[in-house]
Image: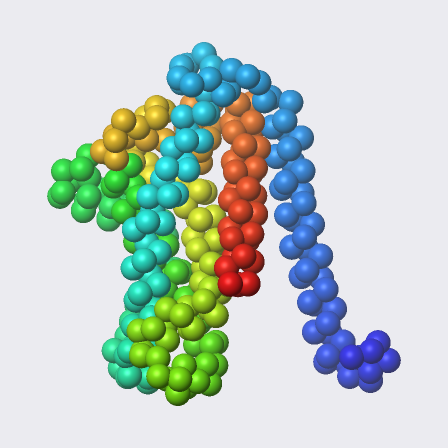
Length: 278
């Protein structure tokens, strides 16, 4: 719609102006946060912050970086298969419009809105106390898997629903079975949408603190096994700020955390593009 047409429709003009204003505010806020973190954090980066072992003198973040990558991989290992196959059942096998599907959708949407501190308390009671896993990477990963599962299920479900039914009908017409159609036709077509949910989940995993403090602990060491207590980058930054002695190092940690998130998102987007071409 051209500007002259907007002038003849005041309602559309107001909506357009609010849309532009919202976009400007969003971009400006993001740029302000990024620039603020870079200005305060880059001057405080030093080789001591990347030492292999954490001490009260170097407050190294390298163990936290390794723990963040391990925690992300372990969480996705638990959450992605369950989320994708749950969505496949809801779309491909469950009767469309059934009450069961409606209940599951309402439940997942409700779980997506629960604060992370509640998930942390649940993980503490269920995994740390009841299952005797203590503060461990496994307890943290299971808690985060439950936390991101609604996001993966809903995004995967929407991606599967966006696949035209003609694709399925064409596959059935060529003699392919239902399972073969799902894995060879439906899932590859919906893969970009599925990976969008995975990318969103990765962002929440990397930036999570409240749930991990109650389940994974705050030990700043590379874990020996999945039952070892760990500290991710976000928790490491929180601990430095809460102590009040390492504010500059916390800003430096924020820079590294920002870089890690951007790298993970960039890698995920590249994988999504490659899978969409297959």
